[in-house]
Length: 184
Image (tube, rainbow, N blue to C red; front, side, top):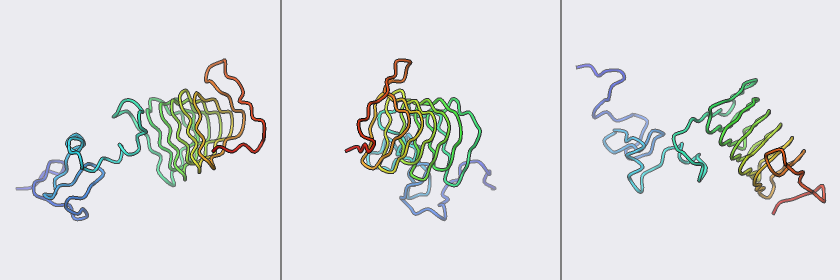
């Protein structure tokens, strides 16, 4: 009897997966069947799906809409809407209003963004309004007009431009006494 193309196949081990190894879709058991993410979550020592590893702690609801712009991908001249999390590993030139943006070390974003939480390991250039928390890691570089609720800059991280505390009309310019500001 022929196996349906999109149906579940019994007793078939994937040729490129090792028994008991984790896959992007869950945990691969010794029999070669894939467990769903909900089954994996109930197993205390099971591997977690990739999407859980990228979600920042305390980011709120799970299973929201997520857009990943992979390495070597260029996305230009767009408006990104209804996206809970944007992961930038390539280049994005856009305007957006979202909950979370994560820019990897190789990633670059140019444009305008209104975000709840921003985690910058790569480059951001443009207008950035972070309603809650802006985190600039050691490899991160942020330039332009920046407004933030909370700011964390890891040693080595760079921030330059018009920097203001507060995200509403009562934003106040941050006072910097020396041009060579370094975060500890």
